[in-house]
Image (cartoon, rainbow over all chains, first blue to last red; front, side, top):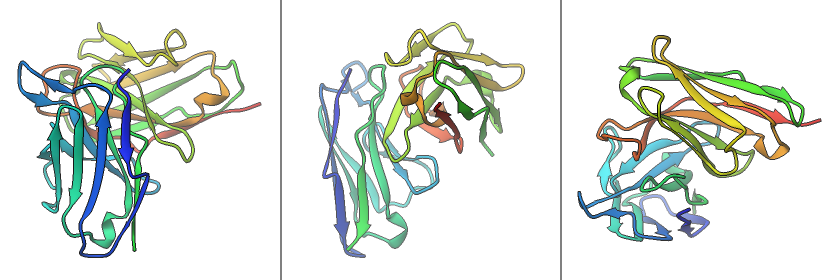
Length: 113
Length: 123
């Protein structure tokens, strides 16, 4: 199984400031035949299901604000929120879909400082 | 509008069985792989199972292999999860989810999720 490690476990950022969450995969999730990284980011608010934010490591899902961006390749990935808004308080998960089982990171709790 | 609605959760004793259902609407269900993901109370997300479009290909997490069975009825736009020999550690909210639009196989992100159904395994 591909082990997913997120850092930090929790993060407190001031409104309007940048938030950065990291995700490291236990093996590369870059598929050489199509040059795509099989990595997604999800946001989960209390009492709600996860919501897809980013797929293929850097493609923003339709309707997701452009303050959310994803970057990275191979084994190291980053989710960046450029200017934190109050509604961004949530737990964020990365997931690899390169190989089943499609493992998730442990989650990062994002709060307002 | 894409909708996924899970049902069938509840309280069951260890060793018991439950069958979860996920009714889909708002999209061409038969054209999409479907997945189940669970979340233990206060915990993180764990991928459980997936099924291809015609039901011939299934994959499971090791922790549920041999106990859980995923199936689908494309005529009813529904995917199921039959859970047998349930354990206390299977207690979780179970979500069904659809594979993303820009994928051609089962290795795909999940773009729509249901609200989940709670399964509690306890004596």
